[in-house]
Image 1 (cartoon, rainbow, N blue to C red):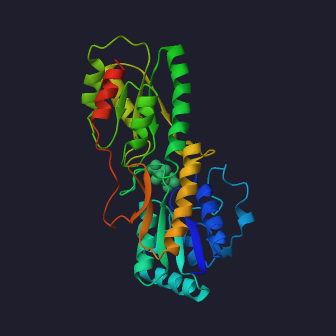
Image 2 (image 1 turned 135 degrees about the horizontal axis):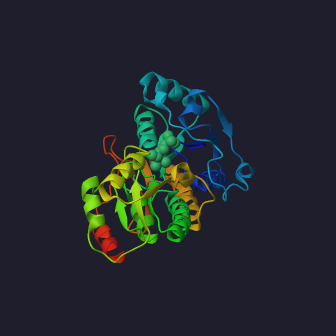
Image 3 (image 1 turned 90 degrees about the vertical axis):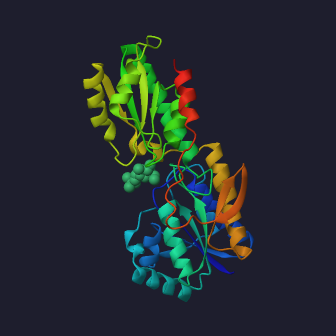
Length: 322
Ligand code: F6P
């Protein structure tokens, strides 16, 4: 293998730059020419590919976002579009591809590869941490720390004013982010899509006699409807007669300088992705399982997101916030 390409796709995640840097420098070390594609698969469609030297990734490890830019490329779902990209990559002599992204990005890359395109290795990158087959995806740790910092600040003002807050966090259809920041932030209630409860049941839980608190924080995962906390809180006010302020953390959770964990994981995953290609692998991703990094099959196209299964985390939180 002499030429490979790297791209970041889907929603950006802090740590993506560390992964790009590792891919470029590991490739260079092994005598491979590494190219970058701008804006994920869109760069392949526009034939916007450029050579990345080791210097081109200097001073990026500490920055959030992605120097290659990212996007969700719906056109790539069309076979004719992928055929054009495949022909372009073949003409350029690209034999391997490293895709840094989430479930949708891996699906596109697997299709391209199985239709005769380059060998593909994925690096899980998503603040949602919802990619099946890996217990860690880069960006998750930074996002949960960013959210926690905001929650701690909300706690200050909530307690000064004896107020209740509903804080909505990202995570799409999964509650990994919500549960971690809920427990770490001492939230009174945590609402996640895996274990849904009705607003009526939540209101009943709130009404149950507990130690009297003058302020409280409910962490609500966005689920399939970002912004849903506004409507739910309205209903909660009506049912409980209590006042609640709402704070939606939104895209702030996607930015910021990556944590030690994200930089380290991204660096190691980038290294293993290139090694994996050199050893003749394809249709795999660098996965974290039982605290070990290894190459695992890319998730099946119809796999759906990884879901949180430990209801006991919510039960423990119920005890800890009494
Ligand atoms: O998948 C990562 C994520 O940040 C989700 O948590 C969120 O629902 C979604 O992306 C937001 O996507 P967009 O960048 O399209 O607003």
